[in-house]
Length: 442
Image (tube, rainbow, N blue to C red; front, top):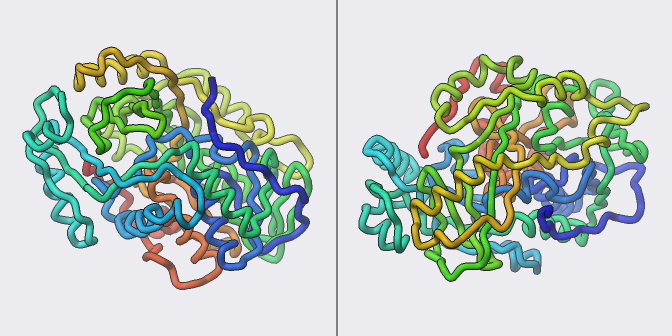
């Protein structure tokens, strides 16, 4: 059974020209498009599948400041302001509510790291706190395990991934967005050294700017523009349970398992320690860039060499104007979840919260997370190709940060004063000599 993503209807008329074309119908793409059309900028969004068909409907649904890379904190603060008024502004229910998020400290070293993050985050007006072990157990009745405490942010929240991006897209369409689903981009064209058109399977759209917000596909789209984007994909698994009376209010991660309450009464359950990284040609190509992060996170990343290496070696090529593209052959990346990993996540839930042992996995799914070597996104123009912009590589943090990222991307496209400092997210950081490293706080 597939994910029950809210349906969004495409615009009837295919456009011949516009000001901005946004490629990708995930939360980053639709948030960018909504921000643009809200400012009166003619915009077309093209999506090879359907809105929120990939990772934007497959994530945990967390909207968190807790434990974020410090460079992302201004952007998530902006996003949380937008989330808190989202239902009212859109006149639609995104499932957002403020519930609080906690990350348990499983070791003394992790407790110290959480305390250090707490001190650093205060400089960004983030109101988090450290819970004692007793306070954590009080907030999570029935919790089993030796936890030293938890990093907790009461103002964090959750939303429903299968509703949020579609709600943003519907609002954007009402504001004037031309939305074309099942419309794959074959090629981004340029003339005179700048972007001039987007060639799709249905025809060409003349434009002045293009925003690539293609998630796991962005690397290939950039390759088609002769640009190197050092992006890889990581497979993540999620499951949901049947409805249960259990509701501690807050969402929480205990290392081996994480959970949140759903609007349908069940639980969304996952773990960042069960991610799978398929070895592909790009894995070898970018190995040096990712090696520092892998060394630190190797306990949580399972490398897998299988059929995907040959598949990408033989078939993953940028599109061209005249021929059927890979984007048309694979409308939606819908990987199968690893059964052993899903069983492990459920078992960990039962170990941590024994009163939930009667709960089983009603449904499980997988999705590809678009990652960068430093685990923060690219939200940037391309210096060498005026008119081309990229918003990708959110490294599993994109859902919560999506509304702010879309607003910042729109700022950059139209040349207005950026909502937050875009410098940390520039594409050129990979070539201008900056030391590339990820921050590990959780």
